[in-house]
Image 1 (cartoon, rainbow, N blue to C red):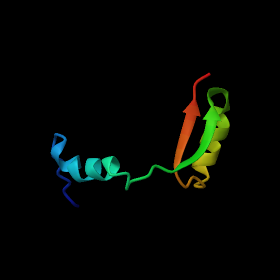
Image 2: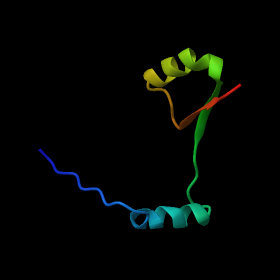
Image 3: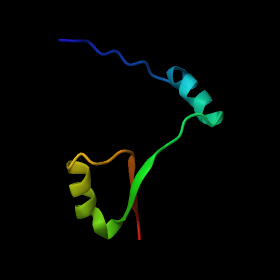
Amino acid sequence: MRLLAVRQGAQPLAPIVGLCQAGKLATVIDRRYRLNEVPETLQYLGGGHAKGKIIVIPE
């Protein structure tokens, strides 16, 4: 068994914030689905095909 310790606060995320501000960290959007397409969205996610973020657009 392994122990996982988590620190609260924003300080541990400071290096990531710096990368975002410098434009060196990109978010990859795989697909966009409309809210009425949620069943297809879940099927796609469940299939393990997603290579980035899946966006659900409210109508």
